[in-house]
Each structure stands twice: as C-alpha cells, then as structure tokens.
Length: 621
Image (cartoon, rainbow, N blue to C red; front, side, top):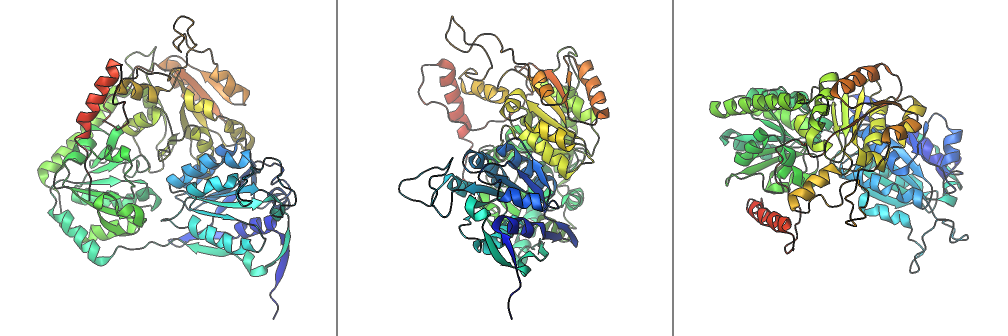
C-alpha cells in the first residue's frame, strides 16, 4: 500500500510540522509553538518567508534585531515554565551570527528556543553566495557552525528528507526538562525552497508528554536520613522549583519542618518574601541571613539549581567542615555538583515525597528562632533602603522600592545586567512566583526590553516593569518598536547613572578605580576618559522609537509617573538619573582575577584582600 504524501517545500513542511506539535503535563495539553519571530533576507525570504506567508495560522512577528528576537523567545519560554516556545528565523551571514548570543542565553538558562538560520547553497553551484564565509579547507563549514557549542542540538538540512528525522530530534530536546535549550537547524537557502513528497503522517498532531520522573527509592531514603540527622539544614531554591510548579509544595515542606530557604536569581519567588522561612537572596548578592545560613549549614539541599559562582560565593559560601549536599534536579549533570547525594527527579514529585517522609521532623527551636528573626531583620533593612533619604535625589535602591511598592502582586519586574540585578535580587519583595524575572545565567546586556516583550506575550494580563540601566539600553532597545507594533505594553524604568555602574563598582574593589566604566569625554589635559558626562538624551531616543516618555528627576515626579504610566495602553518609558556612587550595601566577595604584580597601590591592596578571601574556598567532593 502506497504511503500518502504531500508535496511541500522544505520550509513549508517545517512550518506545517511545527504547527502541529503539542505538549502535555499533568493532563493539560497546549500548542508548543506560539509562532515565528524573524527578519527576512535573501537567505530565507523565499523559503521560510514564503512558508509563513502561505500559512498565516502560524503567526509571524516582525522584529528589529536577531539577537533581540531570541531574547524575546527565551523570556516567553521562561514565563511559560518551558511549556511554550518560539521559532526564530534569520537570513544567512550576519543575521545568523547575531542570534549566537541569544542561543547561548537560552541554553545557559535551560530554556527552549528553536533557531532556523539560513545557510549557503547546498548545491554549491552558486558559491560563494552573498554573506557566505569561505573556509578553504572544507566546503561544509559556515558561520552557522558557531551555533554548535551554544546549542543542545544542531543539524544542517542538506536534503529535504533529512527534515523528518531532524525535527523529531529537535522536539525531543526542546520538550525535555533535563536537556532543553537552544536547538539550531541550519537551513541552506536552496533547500528551503526545494519540494519533496513528505509523508502525510509527518504532519499529524503530536503531543509530547512532559514526564515527572521520581527519585530512586534508596537514594530518597538516604536523603531523608541525612535531613533528619541535620541540625542546621538550608534549601537553595533554584529555577527548577518554579519550572516544575513546585512552589506550593516547597511552602508546605518548609512551614512543616522549619528548614529555611535561600533563593537564586532564577529561583526567587519560590516563596513569597514574607514567609518566615524565606531568608531571601543567596550568594554574592545575598542577604545577611542567607549568607550566614549557608556558611553554617551542616546540610545544603539544592533544588533545581546549577550552583553558579554567584550562588556558591565562588565556592567559599559553605564553611561548615561537616557540610553535606543533597541535590534534587531533573538534570543528572547538575544533580551531581558539589559532590552531592544526587536525586535525579522532578522537583515537585520529590518535595511531595519528602513531605510524607519528614512529617515528624522539625529543625531545632533555636535555629527556627534565628531564621525567623533574620527574615524580619532583612525586611526592616529593605524598609530603610526603600525609604527616600532625599526625595530630590533618589538612589537606585529607592527607585526599586518605589516600583516594588507601586506594583501589584501579579506584576512582573524584569532585568538582566548591570548593577540592577544584584540590588533587585537582594531587595525585591516577591509576592508571586512569576513576579521576578531575572536573566542571570548569562546576564546578557540588552536582554531587558526584548525579554520584556517575550514576558508580555506569554502573560498579556500582567503589567511588565522592565528595569534597565543606560548601558544595557544602549546595547539593544529596538524592540520598543515591536512592542508598539504588536500592542504589547511595557513599562520601562530607564535608570541613567552615566556608565557601567556594576563593573565600575567591581573595578573599584579590584583597585582599578572604575577605569573605563564611566561615560565621559576624553580630557585634553589628561588624555583619559575623565572629562564631563556625555550629553546623550536617552529619553528622546525612546520617544523616537514610539514610546510615551516621562522625564523625572525627583521621587515625587517618579511616583507620579508610575501612576500615569499605569493608565497608558502603549509602551511607556520612565526616565530618571541616579548617583552611581550611592549603591546598596552588603555584597559578599566574588572571585575576579586581580593582577599579581602592579605599580598601582590600590591594585596591590586588592590582590592582598583577594588572597585572604580565597582561603575560604574549598572543593566539595
């Protein structure tokens, strides 16, 4: 019996297949792809572009920058708890390589994005084509090979029939909580337009089940024994808690046992800020209570965390000589870190099992009292930082406080790079597990506005407050245009401190005196960038992109602008300047290399201080 086929181009078949891919978890079935973000050039306009043109059901979104569109897709997947994704398509050459940074951002953050960069002619008759990189020792290398180290799956579709197996593998990775990240299918431009008889069944609706694997029973028993013997345990809540929708279970576990929780950037919001067991931000940008709890812990229970250096304080954050680790993680790779007892499993299911196993366990009363006091003490500190000392000249911490106090519990604050993420991690009072959206796996400058767009597309009923500094804004602000075109309103808090405040502070701590981190004219006298501030008008720039702009100077003006922005239906920018020297106090040490020899006294002092801090570091085997 002959197999039924449909004659489609490779590009048409790609879009038809993707349109029929669904995911299911806990009995809820939903389409996996929300559409395609893309910029057309000669490499894809007649291929993927034509396929989208003839199939309007698979919605196309016109964006302004290829890197930005991948950030938009990443943010969308993050809000969707990895249960939804976007396709991103680009032309050959610079359009493709612009997406590499976005691909790294998605993969490092374990978030699904499908990339379709165009490529050279597979036929090689026309060679080289415009924008093709020539490598003289091989005809099978292009700029798209740069995606290999930043993709969880990579393939090049040199023949139409290769698409059938490649797309199946792409979906396997994209829908795997343990393996997901950027998936790249390089699409030679001639193959995109080439027709083939594809099996009809290839386009049938397919539902990919998202499993919730459970921990090994013996390992779970050992984990339970370790917890019941512990006197000062602490839970590090990572992004896996939120992605697995385990926040309610975590709350029940810690309320029952008294085990305190500290939160990574991705895990912030796992508990509301006012839960008595919530010690807040962990690590380099952590709260005093969280830092102390980790230093003294005899047992660290990592849930859905990958233990970045910011979390581990450059492996100096756990000082108890008898400390042990338990890791609950869907990824085997992450679960074995820190020499931990590894529970490769779904976070929600394992927490539920621990609730059953630990029904008679409670931390010592003295420890519980210290944890509750640390929670309350930090809340008082946040009150102090949020209260303006000088309403005429607000600081960054006070601006964060105004946004936090004004926003509703279901609203979202979004950020990625600069000095803002650390301050937000420490200070933001989370009241909803999706209310805090920080891309800090890659801390990619330029993510903010594009990411805000993706978050709004995923949760259109929520207010999205994008907080961005002048450095990140100058990197990538173009998707303001897309947000206005598509009617996705963002409220962008644009804070100008005339430079790279975060790296300026780091430079100061290393003894290099903020060198190269301030936006200043070159001084004719010194020959260095030590002149006056540059007269860049970022507010007018945002206005030129179509945003409604409020220029504010005082706290009264800023608070009034927040209220007015809430009434406006299109993307709004609230501009304010803050002094870079008035930063939030209390950051822990973070290892960054310092010159071992230098003629600069402050660098020498920085190196000696680093040697002292490095004595706290250790291997956890």
